Length: 416
Image 1: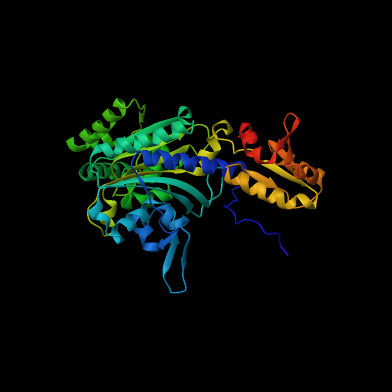
Image 2 (image 1 turned 90 degrees about the vertical axis):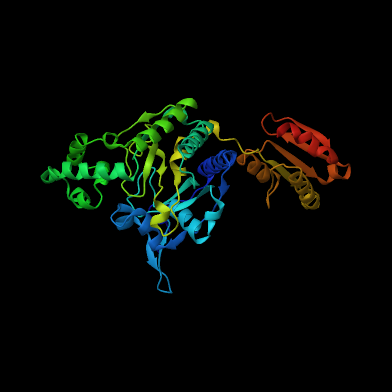
């Protein structure tokens, strides 16, 4: 029989990584709720059309990476590759347009079939925030400030750069699209096969190409800002001014784009040099056309997502609060078992982490206490219990003292 292994691109989360995940998620919830966001949890799978509409038929995610399957009822379903589409669907199907503006946060697993590598898994985990129904640049500024506050609280911001750009409004982007098509059409013989396919359908995605020949062409391509109308230029200026007011530093990256038509105005990425090739820690942008494309009413939207695995790689152990060290209860002999059970329950009610081994003599139980890094061991023998006493042993110093049974909880306060 073959050894059981996790599916390629997935992994078990436990130990230090589980503590890092919990710490990141707890910080995220705290910061998001400070900004007035409410939690949303969408299904892990949706009808495939939800993602095809939002991510684009020609995108790599839809054409190569989605986990799509047919259920027993013949419906095509897809495991979610990202959060925003599900939230937009929930807005439409839940009739939430009467409640605008809406501010959501969510977190959980996502799924993409891609080559596993450091910081990139087939089942990965994201945190996500969205604001719906706010067309003003204040929403962009606020979400960027939320991201900075989170990364600062995690102790990461000093290693991270905020890169921003504007995609302009529909009019500006269409003018830019025409200019790109004209430019790249003059160099068709130098474009990669993938970029030739994108030329007519989605020329902005050529700017994201990793092909070396394409990248040389992109370096000489027109710049989006040169095609801004007054509305687009003013919107981006307001976003930058707002960041300046808040003292948030940023770099304008004119090559930072989003390929789909429903994106507009602000696009941004928080990048680092701490993760090798996978340098993007958090990314997002404005998607004012998304909900309308999905069949809902015209609704402004902006959001960002961050990979928990990547954040966990960066978070120092010094930043993760330590779990309270356990108290080990050691009954000495069968007669002490019942009293040990009751003391363990009482101490747990008082807020202590308590371990009581299920079997073994005193020596084995003390070895377990040391393995668990217990702060103290409470030894309970029948002779001591007859006098209403227990022995509390400090496992760091090796000292011990006899304590009244009813005073054990108070005595252990020093070890919290």
